[in-house]
Length: 331
Image 1 (spheres, rainbow, N blue to C red):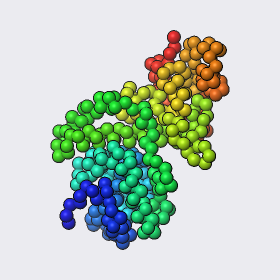
Image 2: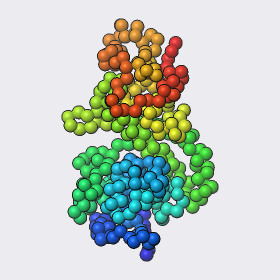
Image 3: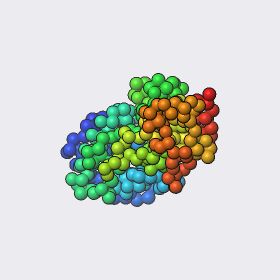
Image 4: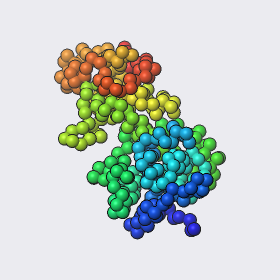
């Protein structure tokens, strides 16, 4: 079989997608101890799209069956075990070195270009629907079929220079271990991997707080639609100061409207271990004479205590302590 061209991943034609879906629908689950068929390009791209929702590093061969949406749907549709999709995600981000031809380059190109990723994702879904594959069998797991725009959450918190600094050692290791990959591709992939991790972190924070500002209760759901830009999800202990694990911990995050996010990030307000809200010295006096400041940071709209859903995970006290001692304007 001739090697696949990269255009088959990045610019699939309707005819090529139709041929792929026809072959997928004709698949049978392979007998035990026999090789699986190769991934078709649309399968690779859907695995990449799934990585926006699922952190493959949290799952191994014994736990892949617990991986969330859409891994189990893809496994049933493509007649593969969930472990195959977890492994494919690892191939795509370069953490496994035995990926197929073009896979790292495909990931680097598509994750750094959200318009391209959205376009190919929608082409794949349109072709699937034309072949009778409904939303139950293959859900629109990125929520783009009805005119929405692919939005990577939490990106406003990231600073390019801080990303580059954090990746210096990793880039050096990659350049030695993966000398088959151009350095520009490696850098683009590693940067995109950081941004995807930030997206998953932000989505986890937003879900934990049910898409409401924890300081004033503002909801991002208006008129029956979610308005993602109304709220941001950012770190309590800033990304630049956090370890890799802390950067992905949703208990290190608050959902907030832009004004209250900035007030917290700049230390005008803080939260203690009992989740009570405190103003920096001088803020309350300033509000007595500054009406706009009072309208933004007074009570209301703020409340005495953090607003959390009953089922929400509470923020980790260690992060709150860090903010109070390192950022809060105490004097």
